[in-house]
Image: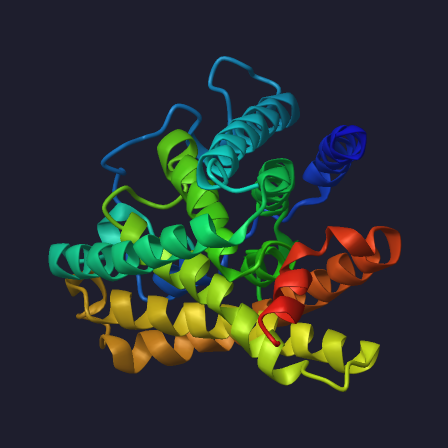
Length: 91
Length: 220
């Protein structure tokens, strides 16, 4: 368990360090859509933290970092529950 | 490669939901019969790692970027069945909380990234077979992770190409070459990062590579 906690801390530190270096250029699919003048409409569901930001935080680095950490913890929790569920009857 | 809602026709959305549901059901059944109880923390941490890694876009040429998808990475660490489920959780949370990838296109995104990524396990298993040498194993990871991106992009290109949004521009005749062009390059980033991550883990914690254990087990 201890090494997993260590891994979690290391991943969050890496995220905090690497986020400002991340490219904001369009990804492959967005680039293809741009090339053919296909515009992305307003999504049917906007999400609670659209584009990995927390709307109430104005500092864009902190906003994205916090959204990232929240998302990280949500995925961690849900995947843990899934893991417990699929292995319930196993030894 | 996350397809937003407006890019796909309803027919393709429904079709991809059905296809992905079949694979998810299969993975769920297989996963239940495969993994030990101690597996949950590894599944949790590796899923969360891939969520974080997908936020870090790396620039390629021509004002375009890519990011690790991590399907092959998860497949190596978790084995194919849990990798498919794990990536589905990552994609689901991205769609639900961050509007990264649509709700209606979720089935397509699961197919392109989770299922193709998870199934790349079998390519690693096939290419990296005995006699087991480090070089051969890592080259098979390199090839499988690259191919998982190229095939995912091909599937994505077909889905958007057959949808009305891209019909005016020429449909699949233009979407397939355009998607492949960018993702042949983005796939190299995927391959470098995946091979690097797995070799680091192999060095630090060889026992953690559960997918490999399964890989060995299924070979008998």
